Length: 251
Image (cartoon, rainbow, N blue to C red; front, side, top):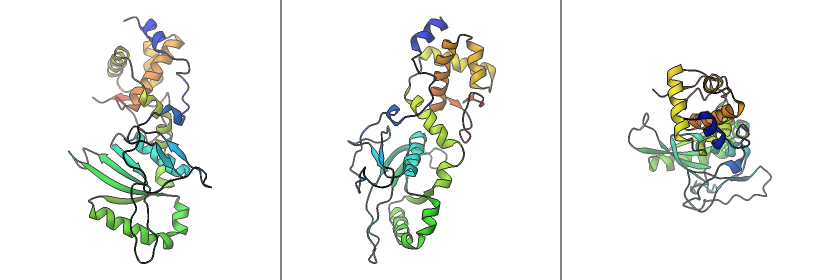
C-alpha cells in the first residue's frame, strides 16, 4: 500500500480541528411526537439536537444546557439504543398537575440484562434546583416511580454532578463527530495491526510509528479518533482523551 498517496486522498481540510458543533451530528427523526412541546423562546437555554438513536420526523428538543449535555452522553453511549425526550405524561393525582419526565432511554447491555433491552425513565435536574424544590416535586417523582415499575422500567433522577463530573462529557463532545466518519478499510487494518504489534500506546506514538509527514499523520490521527469513537480502540473515557492517552485493541 502507498500510505502517503492514500492518506493524502483521504485527509480533508480541517481534519485536525477537534471542536464539536451540533451540525456535525446528523440524525433521524422521532417516531412519536413529544408529550410536551418545548418552545425555543423560553428563558432557559433551548434548542434541538440531531440524533442517530431516534426514528421519527423531528430532532430532539432540549430546554436546558444540562438536558443537552445528558442527551449527548446518551448519544455517545453504545449501550443506549434509543432515547425519547418528553416521552409521556403521567397523572400525579391528589390535585397535582400532570408530569412529563425528561427522557425515556432504551438500553441493550450484555452485562446487566443479557439478550434483552431494558428501559429507564429519567428526570434531569440541577442538584441545587432539586434540593430547593424537593418538597414541591416529590409527589411527581413518586408517581413516576410507580408508573415505571408498572411498566417494568426504572425511574432515575440524574443531576449535574453525574452528568458533568470527570471527562466523559468532554469526550462525548469531542468524539461524536468522529463517530460518523467511515475509516478506509486499508487504513483501519494498518492501524489495528500496528496497535496490536506495539501493544498499549498513545495516539501520538502510534501515528509517529507509521508516518513522519505531517499530512500523513493528520489523516492517521483523524482515523484513530474515529476508531476510538466506535470503540474499535479502547481507552479510559472517564478521563479526557488526548494524544497522550493510552489506547489499546479489544483483544
